[in-house]
Structure formats: C-alpha cells, structure tokens
Length: 111
Length: 252
Image (tube, rainbow over all chains, first blue to last red; front, side):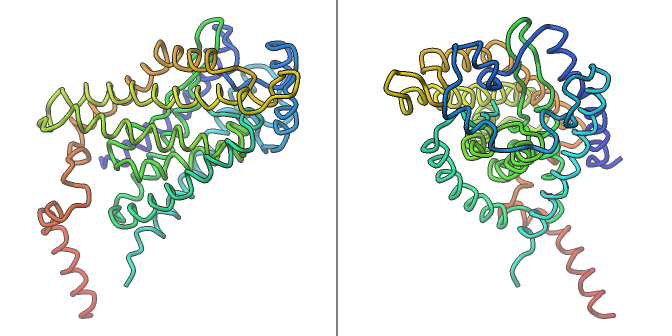
C-alpha cells in the first residue's frame, strides 16, 4: 500500500477519534485553554471585561464557532461530538484543497 | 495557543502581520524552488494532520486545556518553509471557519505556531539526529525532543505576547484594554502547562510517527530526498524515466 494511502487512513481514524478532544476535557472538568476565555469568563476571572477585548472579541462571526453548528451550544455531548467530526471533515477537505492549489501554483516551474 | 481576537492590541497584531508577510513571501519562494510536484499531496496531508491534531484538546484536570500542533513532524518531513505554509493554511481556516484563534491575531498565531515552532523543531531534529543512520533510534529520540522543546518555545512566545499587553495598553486607572495578565502571570502559565503536559503530547505524536515512518517509508526521512543537486543526481533514474516518457509522448 502506498504511504500516502496509509496517511489518509490514519487521517480518517483521527477524524473519528477527534471528539475525544471534546469529551476528555469535559470529563476532567477542564475549562478553556489559557488566554482563550470568552468575555463572560473574563468578567469572572478579573472582575471586568477589558474594553478593547470586548470590542474586538465580536469582530468575527465564524460560521461554525468552536467546531459546532450555530445554536448547538446547549446540545449534549453526542450532538457536539457529531458536529466536531463534521467540522474536522469540512476543515480537512478545505485545508487539503487550499494546499493542493497552493502546491500546484508553486510547483508550476516557469518555462 | 490560538490567541483570540481582543487579547492583543492593534499594534501587536500589526507587528506580527508585518513580520509574517516577508516570511510567507520567502516561504513561497523557497518552496517553489524546492518542492517537487509529487510532494504536494504530502504537504496537503501535513496541513490536514496539523489541523486535526489541534482539535485533540488535552485536559489538565480541573484546569485548562491544550494541544499539540503537529508542526514539528511536518517540518521534519518537508522542511521548515513548507511546514510554515502548511500550518499557516490550517491556522487561517481554523480562524475563519471555526473561530479558533482571532482574525486580528492570525499574524501572531502564525508566527508562534507556523514559524517559530517548525523552525525550532526542524533545526533541533537536524542537530540531535546529525549523522544518525536512517534506522537509528536516535532519530526517534531527536524527533520527540524537538517536538517537546519546539512546542514549549512557541508557548513561551505566546505567553510573552499575552503578557506584554497590559504594559502596552491600559486605561488611566490601570485597567487593561486587552489581555489583562502581565508577563509574571502569562509566561509562567503558558510555559508551565506546556512544559508539564502539552509539550509531551507533541513529543509523543512526533516520535511515534517518525518511528513508524523509519520502518515503513524511510525514504521520506532521507534528507537527500529533499531538493539538493547531489540528491537530484541520485534520482537520475527517476528523471531519466520522466524524460524518456516525455520523448515518447513527444514522438507520437
């Protein structure tokens, strides 16, 4: 089997296992990554929301925030795990497509 | 390690975009020269691997979470400049589509994870595995060590970027405008958790994959397979085949 085929199989396994990145932190009651708190968490941590942070934090509305579907924040872990896998698939498909395009442009040697 | 929007002031964001622009330019020039068309799928796999490995949040029980970047592995396999491009693509898509890392912080996040990390990792690996035979265990150890140290250097930079913000931007009464934690908190927090936990994740991921590849596809780790003239000579047979095919096709 070609090594790239093996890599793609490995990738598929990682995609299926990816919800572990959601379930394990939940299980061990771990919160956000350091420095990646939302505005309300910040209020709890330091007693105020830094003004610039408040303004900038809502600058961008990602279509699938936190690797989930919009409005799914209150859904349970099974739903979120499903959304996580879909996010991984979408993210990987787009990443691969973009790199293939960049790679194609870069390896087109000038005549 | 994905700095969100609002944690870095405009000046810091601008500086890091300004630093990354020439790095991205040089990266595309170098990759254009060195990357072979048949390596492009591997580059795509590298970017995808980095993307998905960053989704594996590892918890510190009762504390925060963190993750590996996978960038040291990509750098070992394809060189640091190609890794820079691959990780940049992953980070930009994470920011735009999934809100993981801010769009104002793309410059800073790419500096930490797509520049510092693959370059530190690559040269650490090269140094530690110097002259090691292709089947040597020293290559596995070099890969793990490079992964551990490189992720920690990247985390240290991130901590410094966070920690500088309250010094750079605050109101008259001392309230921070962006990240409120100073260097004395941000640096130990970022460095500590990566030294204790997340650095080991990058180390294990990098070492395991390299160990596997040394057994199953050692040609990927033979430095001579990267673009250099001597090695290209060694690949003469491959090229000759290509030329022959070209002649045959041309003749028809």
